[in-house]
Image 1 (cartoon, rainbow, N blue to C red):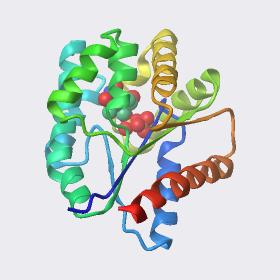
Image 2 (image 1 turned 120 degrees about the horizontal axis):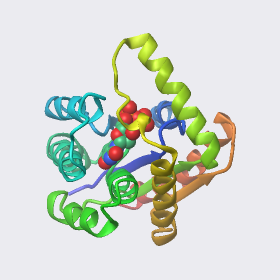
Image 3 (image 1 turned 180 degrees about the vertical axis):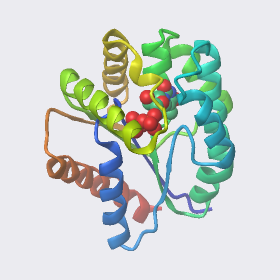
Length: 222
Ligand code: TYD
């Protein structure tokens, strides 16, 4: 059975993931791949409904354990419906956030710890690991300022309030940021850390370099 290639992008809100995913997708398409793109939470009809509960600022009473469980509910559905079938068909899947987000935000930010997140991942996601994770982690102050700007703008444009996470305090984001660094240090083979305050083009170049080196060779070797 051919197995495709699974790439995830991670980072704080406002780290530029969305822009980079678009550029990576265009690059892959020019090379004859037809990448499957999705984001978490969301990406399936059920996942989009879960996303509404998770991101709406009115979900104030959401318990951290419920939040984590919903993230995994969304993910299990995306794996069953989209990710695993695409990988089985030999495709390249590019996912905007995956279990590292749950470890960083719920494990770190909400202080639930890594252990429970990794255990749920083993059970509910059958341990499915990305072949490559691109972690965009500009300096903490830069990330924070971008996230706040972006979300105010998005709400003004779309009228949709998806700001529940953005109203978190700086200390929350500091813990998320630190947990991401911990994950990168623990799994250097899988996670490529793209740090510093780089331009969009510079980040794109680094992404392409990692994808060419690690992934296309992997795909050819299979
Ligand atoms: P989204 O609007 O998709 O933001 P971004 O473009 O930054 O990814 O919102 C996703 C939010 O959900 C973001 O604040 C991170 C959070 N999140 C978690 O807390 N845990 C998770 O497992 C995932 C996938 C996302």
